[in-house]
Amino acid sequence: MTTTAPEQSAAPFPGTSLGQAQDSPATGRPGGNRRFLLVLALVVIATIVLMVLARDSTSAVPLAPDNPAPDGAQALATILTEQGVSVEQAWTTQQAIDAAGPGTTLLITATHRLDDAQLRALRETGADIVVTQFTFHPDLGALTEQVAPDPAGSPEPLAAECADPHAQAAETISRSTGAVRALGADVELCFPTTEDAGALATWQEDGRRWAALADAELLSNEHLADHGNAALALRLLGGQPDLVWYLPSIGDQFGSGAGDEDPSTVDLIPPTAALVGLQLLVLIAVVILWASRRLGRVVTEPMPVVVRSAETVLGRGRLYRRARDYGHAAAGLRAGTAARVAGRLGLPHSTSAEELVAAISRATGRDEPSLHALLYGPGPSSDAQLLALTRELDALESEVHRS
Image 1 (cartoon, rainbow, N blue to C red):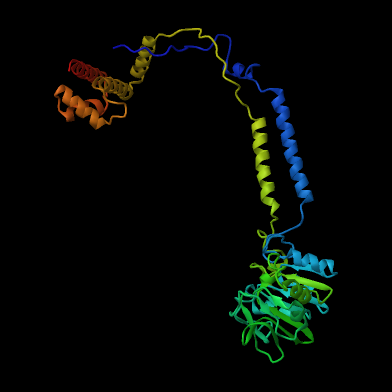
Image 2 (cartoon, helix red, strand yellow):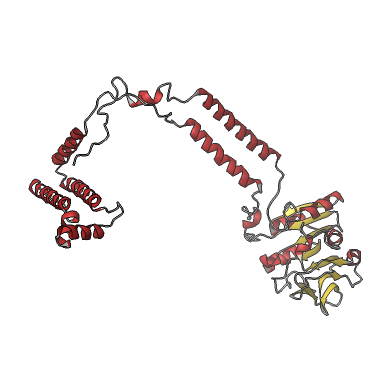
């Protein structure tokens, strides 16, 4: 049985080379594509520059006065600024101490991130103090001994039920996560959640006004407009012309010099940074595509020399013999025999080696181990062994054809 392979070209077309084929007018890169990609790259660069120049200075830190997200407090800070209150943001204890003083209001959040030395330093600033987000700080003694955190909050709206003018102006607040408990006799508890705890505590200490608001989320953009949250927040934080908004950072090491810089670098990355980064990646990809060398469309050409399939087979055989590659030669012979025998027996191409050996055994009467060794055994290591294998395969194929 003779098979005919597709005719092949033995040599490239005379007078041409691979490099010439790539640079030919048929396969070259059109100048129009270059101009289009260059214009596209310039547009992307211009867009990125405009976005960087036009973007607002915002952050993604929860309760930050420059955070426009639901968990931020940009709305409250904007209203305070419009009412004439100067809002200064502080990220470290040292920044808060430098900015706060008599005649200012100091808002302290996340007290659980501060040690006793930091709390005492904040207490000694002489500013009116509003402390919030202290639920996870069991002991506020270094800051004040007048109040203590209490877990008894309320998911329901709370009425003022006290004489404090700020609470009276608000009338109700939307809820309270946690509460504050009074330890001093002069502490006024408002918005009670239990008999001895409330959402807000106010008192006078060292000639200054103090306030402890249990739920910091009442100041957030998401909840500021609920019930009287806005009225309470504006009155608590707008009592002085200057407000220092202190958001403690995890990396703030007061007194060691490490807190002089903003430690929360990741949190300060603006929301537009991800979009700008994505556009930069697109720009890089466009530049790579524009500058890289590309092949054009496939071009057909007449075959200058026709090589017969028999010559191809003989040439490959000579290469195997010259390289003494008996293994590849034997594998090709075995694969061809197996394919022809399987077709003769009506077996599909997906037939496994075991199924093929069993079928040949039934057709020829030979035992399966010898058939498996003949078709799938180790390769020959000499010309004599390869010739013997060829004869055995030819004999096997003739037996199957006779069956």
